[in-house]
Every structure is written in structure tokens, then in C-alpha cells.
Image (cartoon, rainbow, N blue to C red):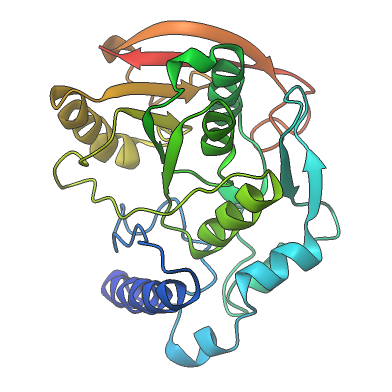
Length: 267
């Protein structure tokens, strides 16, 4: 088992390689921040590992189109996503030496993202004509909904599989969502009017990075909307509730058909 230092170095190698390959394939700018709490959100990335293991990985886009199903998102007419199912064999994307990781964020719709997508579908005037950043985009669901409502959307996602899924899902829904590099320790992004952040407060470590970054964005005149099902690490004292939507959360609540997703504004 790798030591923490070795794991960090592996993450650095994987991030650099993924950036080079993705830039060659798409010409897009990638969110390549190497350490987001030791790759917390994307520790299941297809490219983490040593060079030999990375070379043996399947291409994310090929795997997604072959092993996931393009399915309509419940309650959101006009949006379909490549979604994992029992026969997807997602473990093929991961190291043979490691334990089978939890379901990846990009392969399922989650309550916070679903709430934001519902909100943009119900209130397209909020994003129409605006420059929107889908932060921690996962499958790209939020960005797709914003684009369909008339927004100019970019997406930030550190998982190589998620980046591939965003491009595939955007194309399947007839929109374009270029990728953008964002550093949570850095300044607010330029040329952005609104940040939509779905399900980004899923643990304390990420929350400790995310809230200060979003505050810097707000201080620079960017509207910040957050979607979340009221997880433990959500900074409720910093938020104002905007709307609630009943959603079907495949990722968090497999044993329940419906869950409440909430849209908040950072205040």
C-alpha cells in the first residue's frame, strides 16, 4: 500500500498525464488541481497509479459509451445522462491492486445537482445569457440544464472519468460545455457571472476548501448557488434557502425513490 507521500506523487503524475492527453483530444482547458484534499472527490480516478498501471487503463470515453446507459433523467424532460447500472463493471476503471471504490460521482445523478437542474429548468431567466461555471460538475447535469436554459457554460471537474462523461453527456444533449481549470486555493475565476455548485459539501475536508473559495468568488461579484440535500458539512449559517425540489437521488439514497434537494444562495 502506498504511503501518503507516495500517493500524492501518484496523483501529481496522473493529473499531469491526464491534462496532456485530454488537451490533445479536446483542446479544452482542464481543471487540473492536483490535490483537492488528496484527490478526495476523485480518488477513484482511472489514471491514479504508476505509469505501468496507467497505460493498462481503458479509455474513459470508450468505457462510458460501452458500459453505461444513456438514460433520461427523471423529472427533467430533454436531459439524458450516461448512467451506471448493475452490469457496468465500473471496477474496470480502477486499479486492480486496490479495493473496489464507491460509486463515482459522475456516473449517477445526485440530489444537489438535480435540485439545481430543476431550478434552472423552472427559472431559465436566472441563467439565460450568463456565463455559468458548473463547479465540481461530475456528470455535467447542472451545466447541461443551464446551457439548455440559455447560459454560456463551462465546467470544472478533476476526475478524468468525469471530464470524459461531461463531454459525452453534453454532446448527447445538444450543448457544448468546455472544461476549465479552477484552483480552490486561488483567486476567483474571471469572466464568470454565476457559479452553480452541486453536492460539493460532502465532507469536512472539502468543505474547508470550498467555502473560502466561494466567498472569494462572491466578493468578486459572482452569484453563488449551491445544491445539496442538507448534508452534515453543509455551511447552513452562510446560506439562504432559495427553493426545494423532490428529486430521485440514485447516488445517495439507493433505497429511497425520492429525496429533497435544496437550492441555496451564498450570502
